[in-house]
Length: 179
Length: 419
Image (cartoon, rainbow over all chains, first blue to last red; front, side):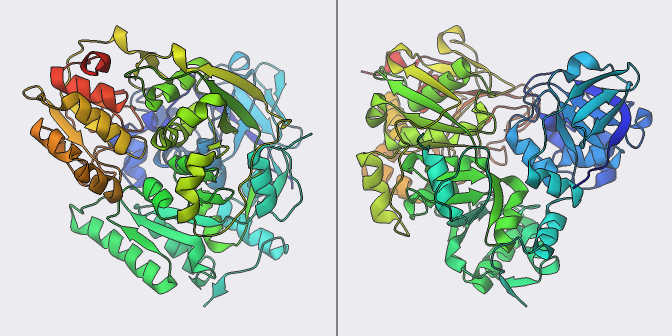
């Protein structure tokens, strides 16, 4: 399965290790469901003007064990709403990883990424060549290959699409009773 | 080359003779468990119908629902969510456990912690079924896959082995053991892997203590934790087990990505300072810090051993004036046992506010803190705002440390109150 190469600017670098993504919207806002409201409070603590700077296709970069703690879905819902197309980190926390891949939100593990990019560099995440390229600086680094299931999930746009696609390919177990 | 207990269980549920870490398999969970929560179960129920046309699950006994958050309901909306869950369970003939206590604990009590079984939930603290040799994983919204399909896709994880040796000292609890693991191994040490517990000291640890350690596994980065179940664990789990499976054990030559030896003799009480569960520190460095609140409860602690130690410390003493001590037994079964033992009266007479089992104190829905308040807590997490205002603080520690701190209204060392 071919995945689209992401191309965008590094919109922000979360350099904190074990970063708790709920801090992106703030725990006090974690129960907000309205997407506009969420986007309005996102990144308040990091860059209050973030929403006006970000462009569709931009990419986030993070440090090791990104998503540690009890990650919830609203922070990255807000990020996607503002146009963020994916996240590249030194490494991820498994709960965060599984949750966001299931949303169809591209993630890439790239050891060394923090040393290779600066904010607003233009980068590419190429899931076929398994590398991240810094187009601004002309450098590149390998990314860890996705598992078949993760690749399938991303290519189907998320878990629901993936389950249906697998079914069409006859790869699911016995079906539940339909109506 | 031998196999780990996790590999053996995943081989069984994917219908294969053997699987190895790194293999991608389609596994059939023995049990699919959830508690109701807005944005989770209500959405799954809707997606099952609308996206997949499923009105009824095929094998209702493979599923279990718990109502343990928002208990008792405080708003009509919360009660409406519970009604959706009750109706779904009734329509699907799926067992529902309501007002029995915190689901991760109740799941063991009512027999879902079958040694050798594979269990999934959206919440990672289900890992505590690992105490009984059950491979139980929190898979977040992947739970939908387990609700609409017989099998889920899963990559067989690697395993980190921890051998426990030595004996716990007075005033040191399993809770301290866990935070010690995070400290010496690191909060990412078991990322995407299984944390397997073994070693000669395992048999000295209480079942409650192992539930505490396995239930918090996610804060080492692990996707779950598991114990090679010994006699004491089997004696609890087998009579309650809802199905018969031969328990599995890791082979002596099983392949581990890392092996640690943890000497319990060396342990002291620890405290985890805000704002992350990665921050384990020596308790003695924080003695005397002023407090407003103490919370003894949650799926991680709040079991009979925790209530006993709190009662031992608080018997004949009083909670400091102005200090709010909330004691929440983890389940009805535990609360009843504590009542029979006279623990509830000791705690109440000492000035504790003893609540019936609920998850609600752990995430700030009850016992909510405001700006500049500070708690010691046996809850699961100490991130900003977890128990109320983002400008309040949570220090995680053992039940013994919460009880001792309640007496002084400051962070205190439980050892001086224990005979």
